[in-house]
Image (cartoon, rainbow, N blue to C red; front, side, top):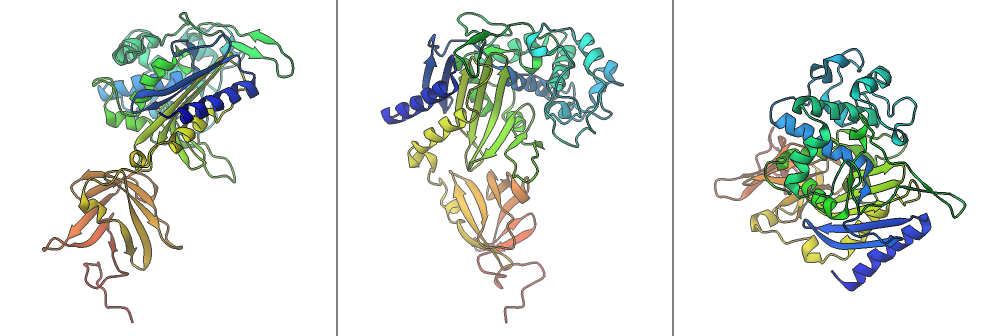
Length: 450
């Protein structure tokens, strides 16, 4: 890392701390599973081992434990929650599934009734269920509505299957294998103190620290920059075998529900316990965290070929004031300083490189671009038929769509007996080098242009 990049990242962190009057903040940029840069600001000056409450980033850990249960065959994401928690049969929206809980589409309220659960001691799950469940905001699967209450149910689901509290499950099955010894349900020194800053006066107020009880799966955990570097690496597909298969990790960050805003393109979506953002030319996944006294950000950039890139982590002890774009701004600064050879590696296979260039679906022009070593991107070269998608290698001369119209569909190179390319078959659509090329096997035949 250059001195200039380190200075730019620290300047951005210092500016956010000063503008937001944040008591203390620590941040880092992760590349290839390791800490590329870290910085801190405020007093007392924190370091990478200082604990902060991470709020809703806790949800990502709960989601991993649920998928572990799924992979063991103990449940399916399509199971109705009441099949596993039968006492909730008349208190959950009919048809609410495990996947609905993890994607905030179960039709549950965002919060519990009073008192404010984030600032008062928690209650056991049976008390919470009797007091907070029963109100329905919509049909399961019909729309996204962020629900802390839904993750309380998800945590109980984990506890019920494992026969022990969900924090114990997370610690034994996830944190210990990843070496995250400084991620705990309650603060362990050295840790920051939760603080609220008066909006117009130089005054601070100490926020209470407590056990949220049954609501804890929504935002209880404390962690450090060092530990969250390991978590970012795991969410990017790394980590020891046995915690969660790479395919299941990728499933976490696959958008399932859009946060719809009328009249605007989507900028926020949700997978399974993981937030996805899509704004300013940058797509990221991860999660934010907010509890009285603390704010946290964990964002991992998605590369053009769909693979994870750099990550950014921000931890602060303030109830409000931290700039929401800080983590993504750090990612943007880091990406701009990456050497071109690292950002756009040359294709390893000349046959893949030979596929680049202009193709035609009938008369509609498209450009096929090689991304990374073997990824492809289909871009519309003109108006009228913009079915664009990215593709990842899925076998010899075969790719799988990542997004857009052709998400999940197969793109295959079809060759003639002499080995030359006849056409590309994309979900049965034929792409040729010339518009309706008479020399290619186009279904229905080509009589010729006239």
